Image (cartoon, rainbow, N blue to C red):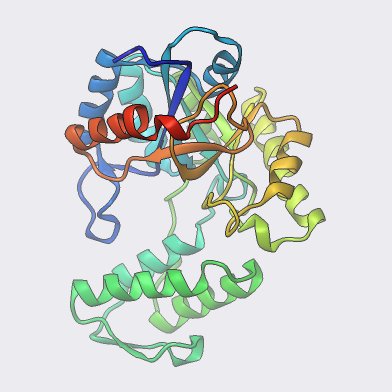
Length: 312
């Protein structure tokens, strides 16, 4: 499975690697599944660092298939669980870190998840934040509320969204969650395992809703902050949420290029070829742990989506 008709790069996207299944985050892979997936990739594919793969694809006239691994957001389990497994198999990867959350910050969606996990009771009066008196007596009801809150608040301006999340935590009467994201020591630990750090903005905003100055600041500052923490050049960037049009646009791709990054990844599905825009590279999200499912995704990219990959 190492040859195709022209150079092809498949970029895999993970978010969290958890010791055990989590009903609130049921799509994330577990350590055991991640280990089986990495064993499969190490055995069957040429896994390369992301920026190296992008540069090689653009300059290679062979029909070589390469794979790059990415992990988004900067959760502590990337250092605690994913990096040691990657090291065991000698696989390179890039972890995209939202720099503003390093060392104690918590993303708004995680605040929602952890609040609903911790709150006590069978009902939650969310009329002050635009919802109703919501049933939370069962796990299914809490998970349903989680999805509705995230969907309603996802594309709001960050200040408005953060205010709503803060009010939710206050209404629920729970403590603000801690310890989910990496600290500076864990970032250094990634380098010890041969994992590259990429930028993912400072505060993980939807770039499309920001003005030019704010979007540029999120992109440029994230790189500067991460380079200051790790003492290494940050080569690659990932757009928060990553859907073209709704989450980022051509302006943001231009700002990333002007900031000096070598490449940037989206969450659009697909594989990349020699003519692909290196600042809007598609990825395949790996949400569950089946090796068979992973192979099916590869088959789709290589043999079905192949015609959609731009030619040079």
